[in-house]
Length: 377
Ligand code: KG4
Ligand code: ZN
Image (spheres, rainbow, N blue to C red):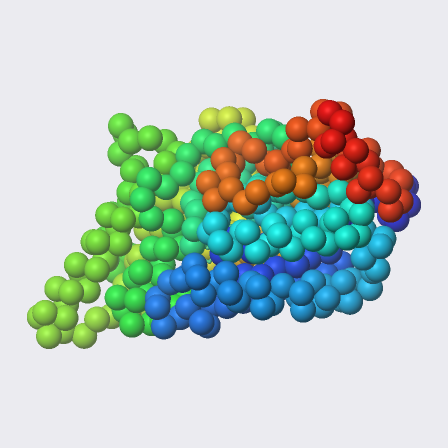
């Protein structure tokens, strides 16, 4: 067996939304996962405020990097690369992470890898369940995204099959929680109430599940409106709103559609592994129903532990390590944040590295290589 020290040691930085995440991994082994969240600062607004998030990243960045390195027990000199979320996400928030990653990579003489946030959400499962099978179907559900992706090779070939045409799944949880006055973020609290409610109490609509609808796209805004109207009608009639039943019935409508479409995509594409990531993957009913339906269809389900499902730096480090291991090209020093980086770009390779950045020498001469290639190509 290969000496684990031969596996790439990578630090990853994530700042696409409201979590300042810094992780350290060696190959597919998690060494540190430090997260500073500004979620409490957004709570009174009922959603993430970009300016507030950017400022919080700036304040948390250096301490969180220090904490991750300490937790991992590694010296920054030993790193084989620094990975950072280049997009998609909030532009100002991304910029803080990209700037920090560049500064550290340049100062330490390490290659820089700008990577895709969505591909990172998939790749993180390697830290939990080992190497990702190729292909793997991925259902990514969070406050910012809801997509079905087919990963042929997580470093180079990720194919979008479908996505939400309006709200993200997590956004729907957050909005319904707000209507029910349950606070922000809404997912965890609805999940809790739903456990004591009846999922069949109220028949809420299943978006985009008609025979003519796109097979893999999602829509949650009709559901959101239906639930809000139902609650308003109860209140207008002076009746008490059955929070547990509403939560359970709403949640069931969301997870029924998510799991149905994900399993169908696996069957259609002949893929026998499904991974679920993103903050909504923490939902207990989603996990249970996905397990049930995957078992019935002969599909192996992979869901990372909740802390790895929500935004974190370890997922970025995991994808960075895979980039190094597969000799993918490092990014150029002029790497910029791209708030709408397409999912078909798992990373942002520099122009000057057509043959990739060789892994193997844990030396400190990477920066010279990188800048030389930039200058002379
Ligand atoms: O991945 P994440 O931390 O951040 C992004 O949005 O990228 O996901 C946060 C979302 C929020 O909308 C939150 O309500 C939802 O994930 N969430 C849940 C649960 N835990 C978090 N939704 C449903 N059930 C949960 N248990
Ligand atoms: Zn995310």
